[in-house]
Length: 376
View: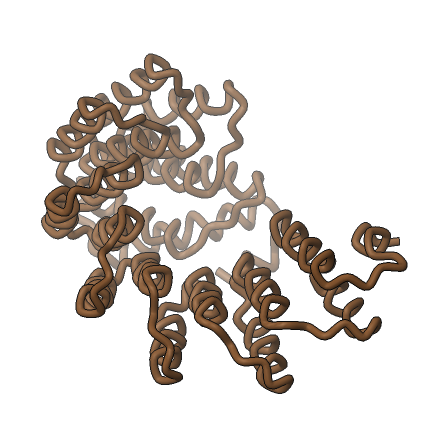
């Protein structure tokens, strides 16, 4: 018997069912959520607007737009009027699904149906565009929020900064931070991490480190994301020593480097063509218990290709496949680009690509994988 079924056996209480839907959503038990609504129907318990809002919230957990739309239509069929909470939840479902245009459409529908968006409505649609790095659309909804007489909070400014970080617009990210301070709001860890990430994306190493130190100076707690962002700035320009320095600083702050940090150091080695340090980093990473992923292997291959250690690059490609990670377009493009960029033979793009193709084909051939051998 299902745990929800055991809890409801012999009981026909709507509030208890709502509680079970909330708890099931919290732990991600979508099957239990579906069972609860079926139980209500079977026992003649009429769903209310609150019931459907909870069902939509469960859909938001997984970004399931199709199921959310189904519940919406069922709600309308039962002539239950959606509230502001209902619309906000539909907007959130689309945001979690990384579908900002659909989130925007629900926002427009909310307005057309005569409901006034609240700060949650605006915050959710702004964050939907921020998730995909569309800073212009996020800023446009921020302006509409201001026109509606709603003041932004820290969460909204963090979304705006995050949008700029994803698009690499450092100037605008810093402008949002200054505007936030002018409004009397106190930046939090996410705020600073967002600005540091914008610096990293823009390749502004000194600015990233300045904001990192400022974050410390104002007493904002630094975390692995903070270190990862400042490390990424140096990795982008191939400064292996600086990335290693920040990794060494982490234990002094009571933090341990995670897989992202190790991959960032490997990326720095790849950018610099430092295959020796890359091998050292890889060994250190595995010795502390981290399992390499595709990013790890792509960096190992790239660091050797850039150093024109082609046999070693192919060996790392072979190890990548043995770990059940298969080369993709990023692997191929990285191999071809880095080899061509570093080659003393003045290779053209086609010649570099031929080597990359050949390396992948030889790898699958040597491992007896005829299916992927033929594919490539």
